[in-house]
Length: 398
Image (cartoon, rainbow, N blue to C red; front, side, top):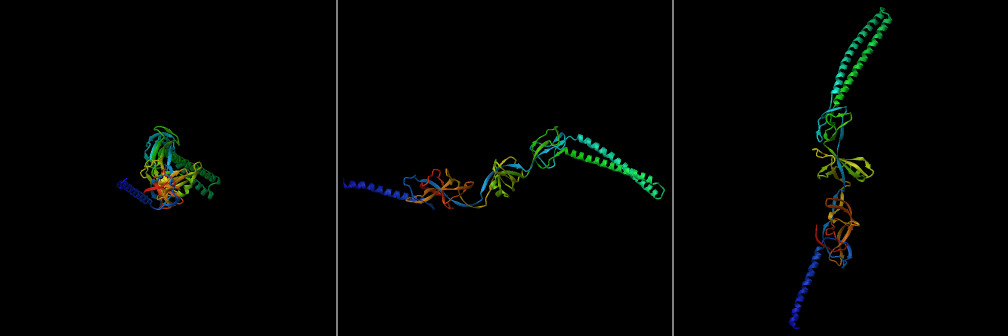
């Protein structure tokens, strides 16, 4: 082979060798540039026969001041709910409401037939007139007999009248006084009976005991009702209550706090004005009822709607926080992946750290973990198929 030919063959080989060296150098430079921030100390060597590098995105662990909450559910209830009943027997003469109507306190919601009581009242008034006349008559008689007794006692004192005549006059006066007192008692009884009848007449008008909305009607026009028969069901207007089911271990922590209550149907949030506990636990569920009072100025909140609330169950304190995407669920429980430096590898490798999830607020999870500190980096994308000890190609950091 000629010298020229040999030179021709060596030139491409030399160029190819230079290109390989340049590519390897650039690759090492790029890999080194991707290994950013600090990583935890880990295994001393990387397995050359292990899985290929994984493309991941990492984010910093934060330290946040937070209050732990526990989600509870419940139902809206009216502060007052009552079946309004008739106090008198009678036929329904008028109905002044329909289901869904709003009624004011002491407004007339129904009227019973008054004719029977009207007749009894007329009779009672006539009896009072007669009783008054009798009282007047007996009063006059008692006064006359008292005057007669006084005259006879004076005559007896002057020896002009016998003692027996005085005793007769005194006996007659006592009888007249007794009859007069009896007439007065009869008058009082007649007046009391009239007062009772007038009260019963008033009861023929059924009144609303509080302002609220009619949710159920139990009567029809002309229907006969007895005392105690339900006329309607009324719920109070204005402030409403959210009855929440709270685990007993959280009951003491949540008392006396104003909490946001969320309507399940609309997502509307209303802050409670007070929070009280019903001092009785359900043995089967180990829960207590907690009542959150909610303002309802427009009466838009309806009893029976489902609600939820994030109940504060701890004091505000600093906790580690990571994006929700950093959490990997496995057979051993939740964990996060961090990058650790190893010998003989320009890339950090994946290391799994078990964590305890405390609670979650939207897209942030508050955790406890041994070996994890604020500002450490955790994998938030690409961790779905990540294996421990797998090299990491870090795309960017958050």
